[in-house]
Length: 282
Image (cartoon, rainbow, N blue to C red; front, side, top):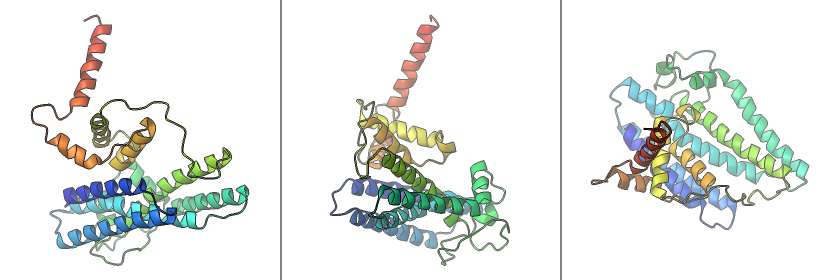
């Protein structure tokens, strides 16, 4: 189940990446198309979970604590983003700034209401997982706020939505802060392209995808909470490159027979060891 869900998520994020670069008559239509993709994926995921019997409690906890929230956070993020842009005032620069600051305030209020759960997640703790992320539990920690969003108890626990909302708020916060920074720089149109990256990737795109997967699997970013899509997006922005269908490329890398399946990581290791040996006089 976990593997199926992760594959579905990889396919969804690729769909979103491809949709975001398409031309639409308006940003609202783009957001609606993105939301359609996310809703369809969540519907598929729901059918899979309802038909599935988790082999053990640990698998169910993993699904509702980490896997399902990735899908839900995408839905919340894009739905909120569409609403923020829809409500964007046409008045002065000050009105626009106040609009984004009010949205940041809402994020802070939500965080304050769920700070104990946020700290629990951030600490990497697991002692409450069987009460927070298993369906049908009623002995909930009284100090943890909860919000019901999906009344179908076959596909929801009391807290998987809150986990998703916290992640969506993190992404929204980043977006709003960048919007305010652009306002300070006098860029009233938030679609104004960013300046060219200081460095560009001139190597194989396959190598960069290999690096993205390596960073993701080793959990080196945001204490291991950054997903593959986020890491890939940041690498694309930083190096000014489009990586295309990352999931399909990775499948091709997995099928390498004659050569190493980690050619780039092997190359880096070889060059780094050679450099060390040279400095050591070996």
